Length: 351
Image (tube, rainbow, N blue to C red; front, side):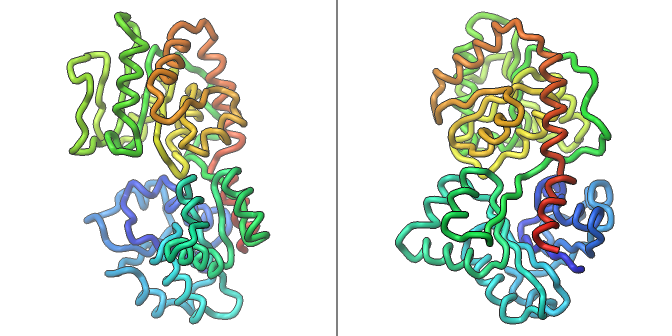
């Protein structure tokens, strides 16, 4: 069984995201010959052997149409991402050329804005709807989007949440949580609302010096820090060392993810797996799903720095047993969100 993920923008960091983990576990747990087909966006991919051993990489130039024309008869499952014109063309070409019994799989990676665009009465909406119709199997990552699509497209749509990477056989046994709020991702973009996060932290912390805000990830060049001289706000920069990042998750009591919009946010799962209290927004549909499992966190309004500050202040004043709650949360996340279990669910629908 040849499983091909065609994702032109693939970079080394993607090995620990869905585009890397799904091919890996389709190979590791279900015996597929897994291939990631992409443009060569980096000189080398060191995480291929470290995190995705056994997965092959095929490089091509362009959008992947020629790759499908050359290889369609060899592919059993073609996996593409996102509702866009490129996906529509790739799925259409594969549909014309595929061998008997082969299937196409579209992983939506969709946020609430994308759901609204799907049903727009214009050419953009038409292409998106045709893309869904052209795929054999379509998966949504969050319950609200899945339930909405299921009403229109029926059994073609399946619910396959995202997961987080771990090689541990059990969750963390001991936590020593610190007075730290952590966020992670591409900082300073419009989507991430980093400015709102910083303002809320400063407002909540006031004059107290016993809490720190850590921000892990590269910073957008256009970002202007609203509180540049506050030494309680620490920019960690891009972290490629997974153990270093995991140590930040394990130390933090709170993980803040105040995005204005987000398709999922796998960093929330990584944080929850390390026992963090999750604070996110209504713009992140996965937050509601995760908190339904862990019951450890809160959802605030988009761009609501005052409400976010109130949540931070409540955490700063809380007398809860942070370490005990962390262990409980880590166990629940381990039970529900490992990539192994997620891909097993997907394989049941594809193979």
